[in-house]
Length: 194
Image (cartoon, rainbow, N blue to C red):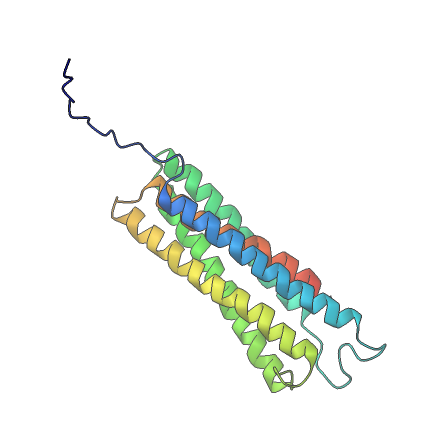
């Protein structure tokens, strides 16, 4: 008996995790490992310094107090991104304004960190002045690059929200990236500045 093969129709399945979200999570996991490696190198270098040589005499001290203000601005920004996402999921029009304030606070953080760098450079802390200088600019600079990238993502999110074309997936992806920046900073601040 001959059987007739009927054409089969493939049904497209929705992935469990949308591509934008999965990509962001993989990126954040890889970057977390990258930062853990740099922080470990910093910790080992600092622990092997002879007494009285960390930081080197004559090098400026890191501005703990003013950076605490920057840190508070960044942490508040992270809270506001969460608030904006919740408002957006409910269709509340305030989501756009709250996200704009969160973005502005993140920009303030980056600008104030840049001003801090300029002041430290004028005081003689450079990449080549000491191991502290090298690690400071490497760790904090890498974080600053991530902060700028995450600000671009948040800005794109705000723009899409303003146009009425923002998906939950895009918002979640930029939100995860921003949380990575926000939550990595206190670790760096406590490890490098103290």
